[in-house]
Image (tube, rainbow, N blue to C red; front, side):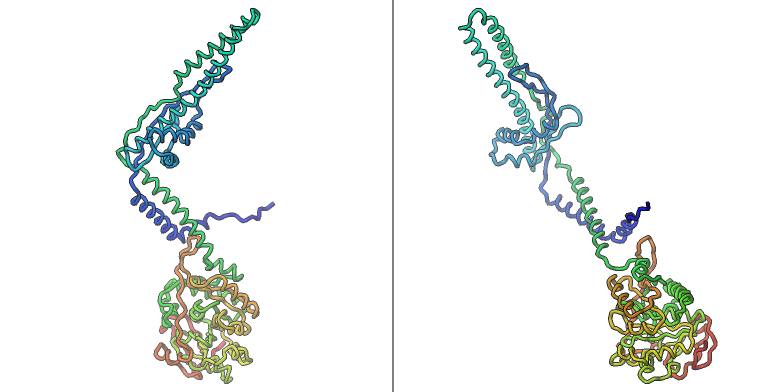
Length: 551
């Protein structure tokens, strides 16, 4: 029978500790620093030591001969640190009765590993006091142990003396028949009495074999205290790292994104500097040999293969929230596909905050909103770009109600007219899913949706909510793009991470902002052939008639 219970992967814990190592290190150092401060501020302490040899004691019984027994060192250790012994020591030191418990708090008693030896240690701020008190405790223990046996012997002596007195009284009034028995019993009791009296002088429960002298150096507990503090700090640091990891709701790997999205991850996009600048967001052109460009090429190849299998031609890119890199991904993947010889149309469908025209160095002007409202020819609104085979349909002027505009029949006609031009790909840049309803509306017009994910800023609940909205709209989720990867993923993978969404100008000012940003805007009815490959460093281009994308 197969065991389906999950197993603990120690590598996961190691990855967590490696990722959160700063929290572990800071907590450990803080604990050591606190311990060092405690040691520095603490008064100096001195520890004196005395040793006592524990001898076997007689166990007198009134009706029998006393017998000796070997000492139980665990019992003797507990006895030495007991209140009766502390009382004797307090009396010897001429201290008040309220100091008993305080004395025991500074006392430590341990049994030696070999021999019947007890080791007494007393710690005090004064070395003379430490030696005096530990010697008092050692002697008090010996006295207490002797007194325990002497009390029993004294009771046995008194009992025998009383018995002998009774026998002697009976002997005076006994007859000849009883006399011999009484004399014999009297003799036995007199022998036992003599034995008990002799034992009283021989009682020796122990002796101090190592008298303490005032210590010359402080107690050596600094290293122990620091080690204990380091261990406690390390344990707290590990616990803190695990708690922070459990509370971190980010999606920490492309695999986790794929599992939550229930779709393949098409690419992992590293972070790059200058991603917020429109003229540097098109990295496949500005930095064609960089790792970010290679990541976008990998994602484009995956998307091309997926589109070939599913027949998807019109693909929408959308993020759960603002800053997911949807516009940057749309522009770069579109540029890669165009470089590979595909004819690609980019649609700037974020009517509220368009960004594609800024990345391509164009002005906004008329575009998608114009085509929907005025019924303009979509073909005549397309703009050629500096990249061969790549065309852009601008967002156009921002309407008062973008959602209502996109919900109308004119939107479907615009997308149908784009498909009638028979390009290889139509890539649609959509607004954030959770910000507005526009993306849910647009999802009905496209063949599939690719979700772009900001690995640094977004949290898992945002993905669940965005997926739920797309599912309600009937969207076909083709896959995901793991953008802005921090390069600190589990499993030892090291990849740089992605950049932020370009800072778009407010929609109604985009025409003014884009002036001089790059290639001058062309008239909607004059799409000239794209410049040669050597002018832009792009891929091969197909020949086309001016004003039309050929199939």
